Image (cartoon, rainbow over all chains, first blue to last red; front, side, top):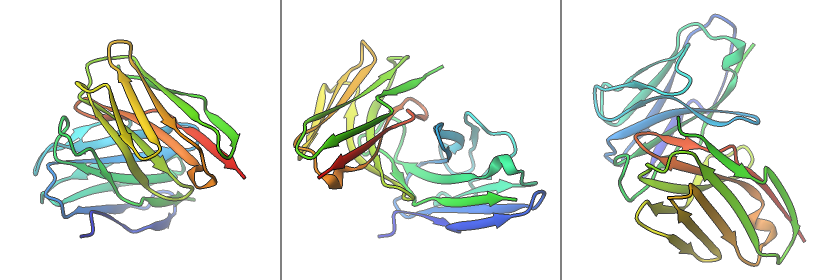
Length: 114
Length: 109
């Protein structure tokens, strides 16, 4: 029973490189989210999905793209990485926005862009 | 736009004290409010979830209250221990989960 799994856990990119972060959940959750966490700013929502095939923008979507081709996976892409995207990225999932079970988070991906 | 504020930003107390962490939010139209714990370099662990129709939830030494009309929640930690040292985050749920910036707690022996 893995819950929410994020890969990779750490990554160093050069400015301008691209990469994809993978989030996988095995709980049959409908909603999935990508957050970034920066010192002194808390967690900020990048993009989210309310079901397979859907995506929506959060607070800070610029420079990122997402896809939800399968219900269990939510991909976060950086097409041209910038130093401002150095952060810790967290994925989360939930049965639904108003449901009783709350949110389950992954352990995070620490990304450094040099 | 929903904004979530946590006070204090940091707290350092001796072991055994009872603590109150505060969370306020600007829009009372929420589904629920959740308190999380985050240890340094780690992910988030859910502590308590309060539905909008509820007033409080309890788990062991933790008690969280919710006053939706005034936009406030408190997390009460009884008889604090060094193992409680972590950052505590509150988050409100609408169609998204919006976080506060956290309270960094240190409990020293």
